[in-house]
Image 1 (cartoon, rainbow, N blue to C red):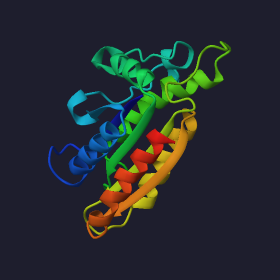
Image 2 (cartoon, helix red, strand yellow; image 1 turned 60 degrees about the vertical axis):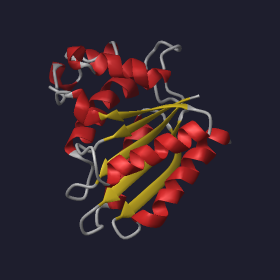
Image 3 (cartoon, rainbow, N blue to C red; image 1 turned 180 degrees about the horizontal axis):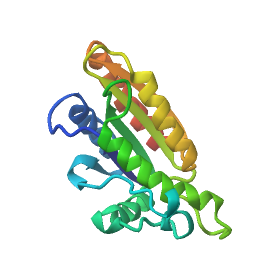
Image 4 (cartoon, rainbow, N blue to C red; image 1 turned 120 degrees about the vertical axis):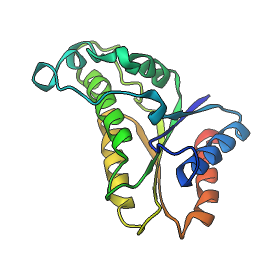
Length: 188
């Protein structure tokens, strides 16, 4: 079992970094091979909306500009059996880098669900996903960020496992919630 923990935080320290480590440790304790993917380190470009918004991603399921590392990331996603999506809450939504990453992946992966090729399926198809939104400021926006991740998971055919909203005030006890959710996802 491979678990990919995808974090949209640009910080190497902070709430999301600690949550990624908690998820990583819980996955390893549950016997999974696990890895943290920091989207910030990938240095991906935003979608260029080629082909009037439906370039090669629609028919070939790859980005025409995948040379920035997106194609390799699609392979990594396909190898995973489960996912944890983590984002800091910025202005009531996902981090800009995670949003850009998910938008590009969505175009390539969701279009597989509508392909005429019966063997074509999204890297997320039927795989469980835990979604985590961490608000360090006012605490507002966690639900909106989770809704945005939920929409992505639905588009790519992932299997909703859990939503975990947390704030700087609930962080202490929600860390245990995340560890428990990862363990349960991998052992059920």
